[in-house]
Length: 345
Image (tube, rainbow, N blue to C red; front, side):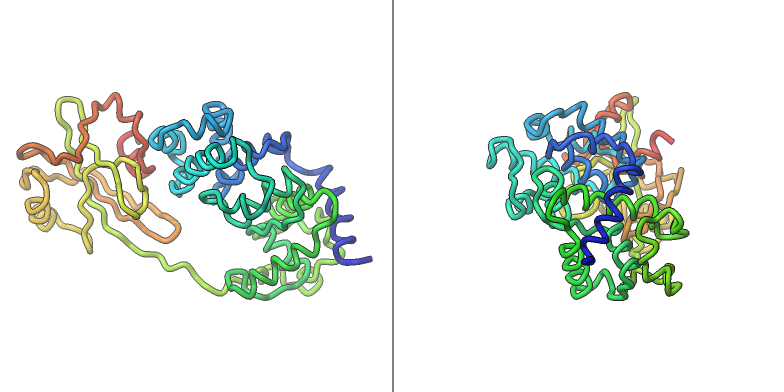
């Protein structure tokens, strides 16, 4: 029996019996499956589920999403992080409507041409919705294949990624590639988990190299390590007659398109005296009014934000890019989670 045969024959019946009843598995609508794939990037299923329902309720079709403004989409996305996903989501919806008549293309290359859709997402949509024989390779798949076949190639190397994708393609059956792809991902999500996998419940355990050689904790191998960059954010809480001043983030930095309090970033932690001097040079704020009211450390994938919040008072008219927002209407603006927690607890 070929590797592909035994792998799928063991895996597919297990998947049919044990898969979680996730709502996007009850449809082959590429719009809803695409939404789930984008939302679940860097997001746990239990958290992403509520957002998926929120988007489907607000934008039932890709045409509805394409017609939304960026601010509306960002507001609905608030709290999920990695906000480029939300901006790409809206742009891709516009592409589908404009370039494909509102229908997702049944072609891997054309799917990858959509904003924010990489090889993984295109393979998921293509195999599940259109029966394309395209392998899906995500973190769960890397882990299952590395352990079952005893592969020590680093999953974050070019050679390693190529090796795993080639193997994943070889394992794909001729029929129902979407079920196969979902089965491998599901096994990695609920059985072959990073720590303390449930090997007794695994349909592939009898042939698992890592289990046989006691290398479960070693696989998969990752060569590189993420370097954390620390940044020091000083936010100015300026309240005036029941309103706060907000600024929309622009450029290519984090939280693009979201609103925050006026910000002054410093190279190192600021004292009241050093911040007062920096504020005087940049903002129309009374330096002597600065009073620290809160501090918070916010962790992103590659950054550690050390945020300090300072009460301040205006000394003259605000800059043109400052938006005066009544406190009752703050919730109408998409805020980074850091700012939301500070304002609302």
